[in-house]
Image (cartoon, rainbow, N blue to C red; front, side, top):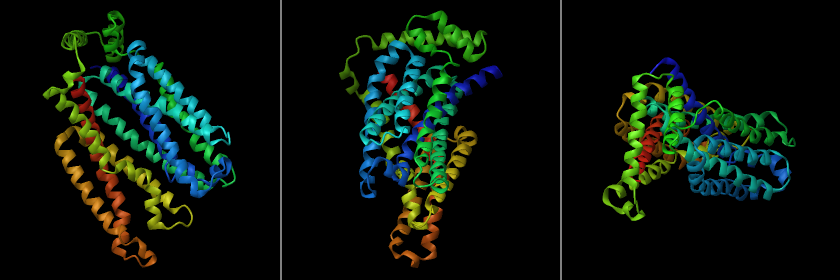
Length: 404
């Protein structure tokens, strides 16, 4: 594929993956137990106490997930009818509406909760369409690496939110509404990038082919590959043939066919991969990082937020190195097993250190080192396990697609 084709492929991946992953974690982390909802300025403006902060945070996160969950199902008929590009524009606009309501100082928690649902709808819809769009237009030889960009940008979102939380807590007065409006308003940046970036991209080749718009599909593929030679023509024919085979294979499909042995195994594999990934505790540690570091640094000042921000920086670097230089050079099953085993060892070391935290200033040096180095090791090794799971999720989606 020509150099221009590679550039366009990476641009396609970056527009979609950066916007989704960064928006996802900026939104999630800013409303984590150590984020915006615990800032004194936010509590003052919305009229709840520190004792009520946990309930408020739980509702904010849970309602966002509710909106995302509903959107994951509702987006299917929409993207099938309108296409991937228009569906993503709608998701981006919906997300921005929710983010704007959250940023405005309404002094009303119900209004904030409603805005979380609205933004969650946009987020959930894009979470379904973006991987679909990526798989339908990305060259086969680049699909794995560019797909892994999602995990890298995911960690970048964590990194951004940590440093924003630390910056506003450190430099803006606790009585100033800007202390929480700035970080919440930053949600609009990646969301706007996603919407604006869609205007620079073409529609999915596969979707256009399915709809019988073959000339538009060919023009879209030519633009993405920056080539109209024999290789591109052969790829176009392969796409058309594959769609014809899918239509024949799924003709008269009934839901009970999912219970057949091969189909059921593929579906279970997808569920198992996602469940195992969440069970590693990586997401929980990201959410509760400030609380964890408070055990080490104490509650005085913002030292715990600074340590959490440093942890986020280490994770970005580690994940980036793994995505760019190691992911395609090591077998996926082996790297998943090795990274998961290393992660388990780190969790055990941290657990041993946490057992002694109640000793306060008398905590032995050995356990302080365990508490400090444990997250760093998790960040470095987490780069491997995160990308490995991202690859596994991609393979699982393809298995389910074959089953359907």
